[in-house]
Length: 243
Image (cartoon, rainbow, N blue to C red; front, top):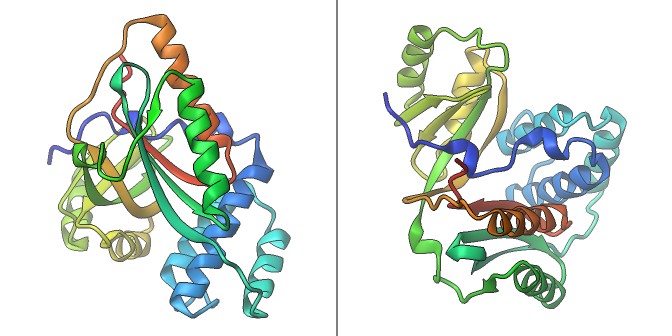
C-alpha cells in the first residue's frame, strides 16, 4: 500500500518537546477531562479513547501517580469548562496552518493565536480559509523505533483491522482510516501486540509548500514552536514540506 507522503511534516518530532513534561501533562490532562466528560466513563476498560490517552501520558514519561490523581478528580465530578475550537491562518510564505485547541477562555486564546501569527509574519484568518487544503483522516501511529516490525506481517494485520492505507516512516508506522475510525483500528492493532502512540483524527495536507529562504524557515519554525508551547493548543497541522 502507498500512503500519504511526508507524514513527518505534519507534526513536529515528538522528542523535541519531551523535556517540557509539565506542559505535555497539562495538554493531556485537558484531553482526559474532556474525554471523560463526553464519554461519561472514567473507566479505561470501557473507554478506549481514555485508555489511549493514558498510554499517551505514559509514553511521555508522565508518572503514574499523576495520572491516577487526575482520574480520581474526574471520577469525583470535578467541573471543567474546556471546549474545542480550531484556528486557521497563514504563516510566512503562505504556509497553511490549522490549530486545534481546548480552552476555557476563547477570547484569551484567540488573542494569543493572533499575536503568534502576527509576530512570525503570518496572519490569523477566518474559519475555512485554509481547511480546504486538508483532508481529515483517522490516523493511528505505531511505534517502530527499532524497525523490527515485518512489513508483510503488518500488511495482513492492517487489512484485518479494516485500515484503508498505511506507510512505514523512519521510526513509526502511520495507519489511515476514515474520520472517527482511528480508535477502532488502534484497538484492533493493539490486540495484535503493536504499541499505539496515538489514535485520533488528523488533518492531512493535500499539497505541500517547500521553503528555501532561511528567514522564512526561521519564522515558520518560531510560529510552530510558539503554538506548541501554548497550553491551550492540542494539535498543530501545516503544509510545510521540509526539504
